[in-house]
Length: 308
Ligand code: G4P
Image (cartoon, rainbow, N blue to C red; front, side, top):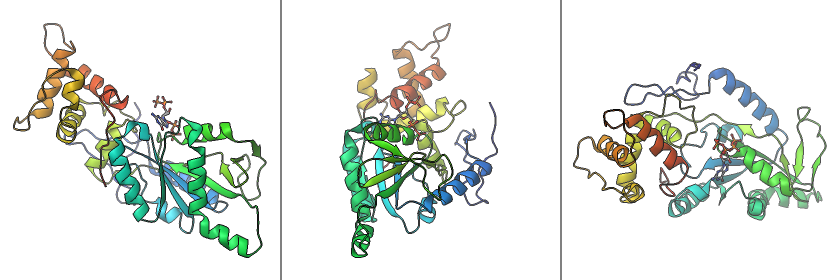
């Protein structure tokens, strides 16, 4: 597989990350990509009123790009905790309160279903309240708010736009100032959405953040799905959601006094699920892939990986 140059701390966009087993986190983002995405977004920012940022509800901190505050300076802001159907609802509620306390308008959504359109519309209106009042005072009426969706790869931007465009009445033509080919999707009388999302780069500020992004599968993980990654996930699950993994696989969990707790649990799962090599030895790699896949497909449960 191609090995892209790592993002470095020096260029101010994050840093390359190393898992504790010494394997590098391979990131699909390198400075060329980021510079292009940033330029595009700076252009688009000029013509929009409100930035609707999608984050992954399972990792609302780690999936939030740190530079967006600078890029979106002066714009109204909405945060959508997407894939909320996969996250722990009680933790999602904490995140909603957390980001609201920082001045964002926040909603938890599942971008695959378009019945949240009213919620999102209300969020956009609430975030732009002051602008709408200003417009009204100046006698500007019925000018739709222009919104742009932004987020790191795989967070659900295209899904969101497709769901919402499906309900939208019609596409409006090009607007001056927007790159040719850019289109506005008219959601209703009040809101227009830029049809192309802004792609942000994930932050890799620590091994912990890198690991969480890897666990949910948002980085290229041909290398990342390692037994170590699955073992760390198992330790997290047994600590934060005790009983959940054991119940799913139908085995006892390993208690926290055991030194290689994750490895021991992975081995138990391998045996239980018949992931065995010739000769009967546990095939830990196969078990690791299975556990990761079960986690990502919410078979183990609705789990949040970080709290505010
Ligand atoms: P992006 O444009 O931000 O890169 O993300 P995209 O819409 O392509 O969504 C990535 C994957 O996440 C898609 O799965 C999509 O169906 C899924 N997804 C998006 N929003 C939600 C949500 O709210 N809940 C759930 N459960 N899934 C969501 P996919 O097409 O199957 O891709 P993949 O699973 O093969 O990566």
